Structures are given as C-alpha cells and as structure tokens.
Image 1: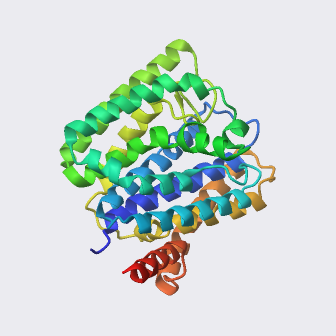
Image 2: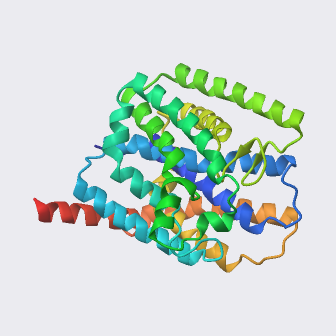
Image 3: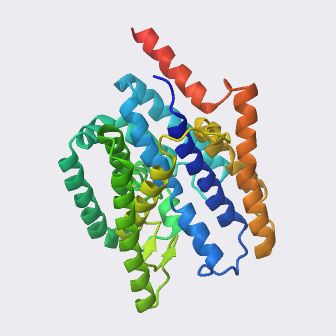
Length: 335
C-alpha cells in the first residue's frame, strides 16, 4: 500500500512542533515569563506535538501488517533509539528513562488490543471516557513528582512504573491518542464531524481558561500548578490536545503536499533522535528572549529543507529504513 502524503504531512507537523518545544525549553532565558503571549503560543503548539505524533502512529498501525516477530523487533529497536536519545540528552534524562520512543515501542507491542477497541465506535467512546476518568483519579498518586523523579530509574521496577504511569510519556493515558488515531482510520469521519468535535473541545478548553483566570492559576504549564499540565498529562490537557489534533487533522487530511512537508514525516524517528544532539552541545547558551526566539525558530525550520535534501539524495540512510529492513529480513528468515 502506497504512503499517503497527507499522513506524512501530519507527522511532519508533529516533528516540527516537537523540535520547537524542545528548543524553546533549552534556550529560553531563565527569567522568561511563562504567562506572556509568546510563551503561551509555544506551549499551546508544542503541547500538540506528542498527541499528534501518537495519533498518527495509531492511524498508521491500522495499516500495518502486525506480527509478534515484527512487534518485538520494533520494540527492541525503539528501546535502543530511546537510549541513544538519553545519552545525547544526558542532562535531561537518565540512561534508562522511558520516553516517547519507549511509548511507541509499547504501543506497537500492544496494538492488537487497542486497535480492536477502535473498531467499535461505541466501545471507543466508553474506553476514552473511562481512560479520562481513570487518569484523573490516579493523578494524585504522581502529580507532585518532579522532573528528576519522573526520569530517574533506579531499577527495573521503577522503569516499568515510569513506562506505564509515572514517566514523561507513560502508556496511561497516552494510549488514548493511539485509540483515537486508529478510530480515525477505521471509521473515517467526515471533515464536518471532525470540525464539530474539535470546535466542541475548544469550547470546553475556553471554559478551562475562564476557570484559570477565576482561580488565579496559570492556564498551561509543562509542570507544576496549572489548569493544563503536560507532566503529568492531566485530563484538561488531554481534552485540549484532542481538540487541537482534530482541527489540524481537518486542515491537512486528504491534502497533497506542495511544499515538501511530507518529507519530514518520512524521517520523524531519525529527526527526533538527531535533533537532541545540537541541543545538548549548545545547551548553555546565554540568550535574551529575542535571540532565543529567533534561534529556536531557525533551528526548528532548518530540519525542513534538510529532510527534502535527504529524501532527494540519500533516502535509504535513515533509522526508519534500518528498522524496516531489520523487520523484513527477520520475517523472511522466519518464512
């Protein structure tokens, strides 16, 4: 089955947003406000990166010819890639910290379960609501954890706990976005339906904004006290992210790429691993808000033309292609 450019575009947008939010977190001045308009825009757009990434992953998994052998190979490969990220960003992560790549590893391994759920629309709705409720009830267990506590791994049990619940990208609640992505593939809702759902979510998010003003707490923060938090991903954030993902999906689905954005999507794993290296090398730059904003924007957009050049000249050299070749080779050996 041929690749769809619109799906690659969606993944391309996700990786650009991911680079942007990581760059901003690395180079933002220590005294920068987290409540000014620029900070809120970056937080809002950057907060959609992982939800969009995982949703696209769910959509693509429905297209995949899943086998246990293939899932195990991907599991090992993505775990190794996560360790490579942790090494290159050792100031942020412990060597064995679970992250977004280990999340993808576990999601693909468990795909038969959540893909089956997504095939039944009523069951999908029930499970989604249940996951939101369960996530909310479990927040008190780990919402006070600091970044260091979420990324430090002292043993296998702590690694499993972070992988499933208390890490930066735990299986619960992030499996929700995989189910949504798979459901979008299985049920193919119309753009009008997507727009209505996205708009409804925006209205709910507007209420969250009103509450934050009334209660005099920040609207959105990566960590700490706020109406929407990313670490951990609270239910208000999940609803807002769901809305944003659906609106982006409405804009880009079934639209062919004319500016090469889909090339980014074909290299999302490679770019995710590579973009941490310069961030680690230049992590100690002392920048003001203006220069940090310019450098963040430039660094984010730089990967766009690089991906176009890569796909035109050396498309076979990528982590995606290496994982694909390993999977196919093992399947042929087992045939």
